Picture 1 (cartoon, rainbow, N blue to C red):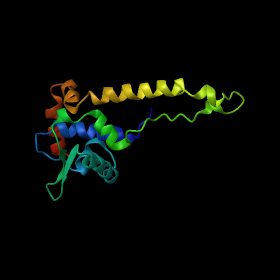
Picture 2: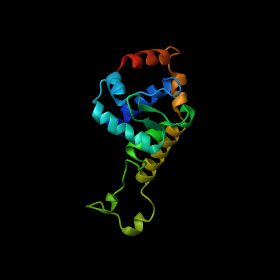
Picture 3: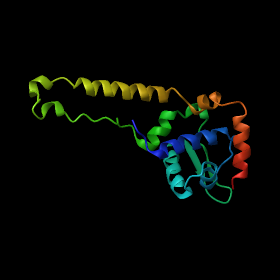
Picture 4: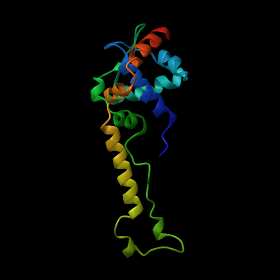
Length: 157
């Protein structure tokens, strides 16, 4: 499965916001500078997380983005689906009924075993992401990471 690069950006940006003091915001420009990303494009991508309810955005000179809910309530699946949607990346086109090796419609009454296996894999992936919150990610970071992130974000204007 290959996800758009913006998925990585938003996973990292959400993790960064989760490390900030509660209520603290960071602008798209600060996050873009922190990760050396194109600010205008990142700002558009961050709006997907606002629409999904993972982030809140405020306008004005002291505006920016912050978590809309506690980090324990925002899963990696929530972020991924906000950007990429929930559809499976695999689509069975029933090629087993085409070409020289075509099976008859009667032989294809059951779902293709490959489609079943791909659906199982997609569901396992979704369950894994749904079971991992931003709080879980923060717990796996070195203890010094949040303070380092706060200090460096404060320097990114």
